[in-house]
Image (cartoon, rainbow, N blue to C red; front, side, top):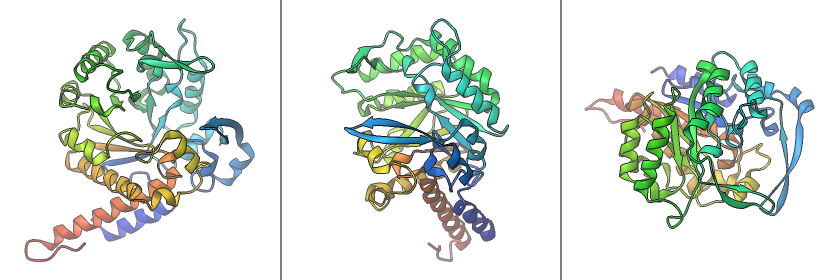
Length: 360
């Protein structure tokens, strides 16, 4: 390892350039196009192209400001991979097979992203949530298309592959939190998922994020490993810390393509609404998070998981969310700097040898 190479990479990190920082980590974000990233990821000229809308959340009204889809070209001048989550809310094709609005948006991303771009897509809730919130006022209704593998393949998986081609690197299947008394047993849940993914038979790597801790049992992790499905390490409100999830997973990765997805979404023990309110308008890190023990632990846990990728010859996709830090690019800086510090520490420890003290 060259000290100069680390210094050069640190300078790139200061400029929010996280590309090819190390061979075992890919930096990306959960969604993009935030006006709060102007001056970090996007040039000032985009201020003239901001679009805004109002959003009500947790009894408060916020103004959300976004940039046009073609800004993705600038995004990939800073990051290696992008997770698109708009596909979570609606499939790419309508039930009758007609193209939906989301497939047109995805085509625009494909048009403006460079050939080297990598994408993760969130699978539609239509096929992976037991209940959907519908109506006004919204109520939870049983989802008739839950684990409908044929519909998922025809209306999401296949059209996504046709649009993005080899730039599509994975699907994220997110299952929402449920109380132990309201859902299936851990064993029944594994059997349901086994049938679904057996029928889906996707050529693109699936990664599963289950948000109910009681479902994260040994049998689940054994099935993931046997099936070659990825476990999503998720830093989310009501899940255990990432370091604990690593132990629960038997300190092993399971995706057949030797990739890992780690999503840093919200501070632990903080609701979505509270994290959103604290972080909005997503233009800078929030000391309430960055200076907290939980925030510091999140950075250390993500760094440790990244080095497990190195040790086990896997690529770790670190997906950063504004709500986890206040600002995703700043969170990238915090983790990237820590990874490079650890790289130097390990290099010096290796040089010390058995007769010389390692430098910390």
